Image (cartoon, rainbow, N blue to C red; front, side, top):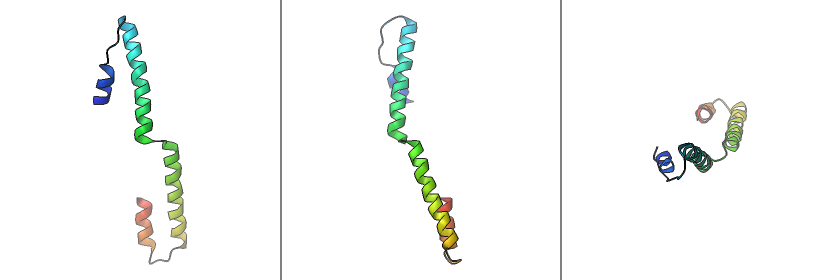
Length: 77
């Protein structure tokens, strides 16, 4: 909320419709940048996590019955 509040409170001069349009465009750009910096590329994160899950599932197929509890915990994570 503070991020949005700070962005919205920056001074803009003009008619009310211009002010609204300018503030919305600025907020959109700032939110896009914030999202990239805070979340990173979500697509790459999902691909990486799917690869980890695939490795764990393949290890489950190979593991002996004694190791299966540890792999099941990793798979849930």
